Length: 358
Image (cartoon, rainbow, N blue to C red; front, side, top):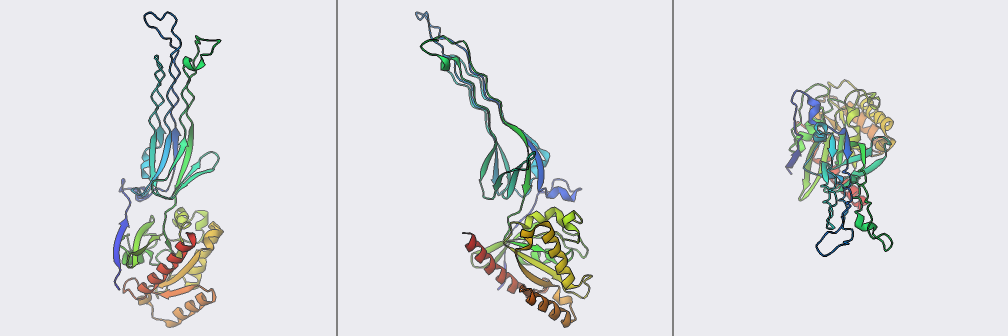
């Protein structure tokens, strides 16, 4: 059965001279809600009404700052170039019991999967994982009461009114974690981008040298009638990645939400690292970065089988995976050998995970 290429979520490139400008997944922003409007001191003044009572209106509420998840966005690039969000204050109260107009809310759109933290305390405010999900991160100040609100049987002509409250202001940290069912991991040059391009409509950059992929790539894989899952190609990990070495460390957070990890290991004659060593190196970095991440279900695929001449190498590594009780496939993304089998298996596993979650 031939795979149906569905869609590829591509980033917008604003700065072609900077390869990292295409994918921004962590940014600091400042939000300031609007102040409330002041209450009004006013008295009714009409002909033949010599002692009109107080009629000062209340001030309007200041605008809120709201962060909303949108599937139209792919990175936090917009927040990189617009880091300050300030809502308008509420209108002041007026005479004749006129209330001030409320300040307009400011809605900040971010990609689905964005986590919002208080920058100072590092407290998680919200995890926006659904389209249209919102959170108020800074509330506008309440409007002050006009003098009409202070009238009592004892004090029928109050001359005092309240000022509006200050709106909340603070620094926030936005951190994006991609929402994907399958995260593709492995050492640099293991064939991750090649596999993604062969089973989806994604077109990541592919070349025969490490760190070709400078940012995560997403693709939708169709494995049956009306069945699909999202696959994310994560830039290659190297030894010491958990300490910030290489590029993989910057994107490890993007596999934390995945249901399954597809671990690609280069099996070709030209591989510079032995399959077992490659497998253990990547898993060591996962466990050092996050024990929960290391505990995720893994499927191992030995890639570049078309460039392998020694069957002993393949048999040895497949036996190693059996001892680990890890499903192993031998594939070649170039010729298509074994690719259909691994995609079908991943599809079934993703379905199981989805049923468990629901």
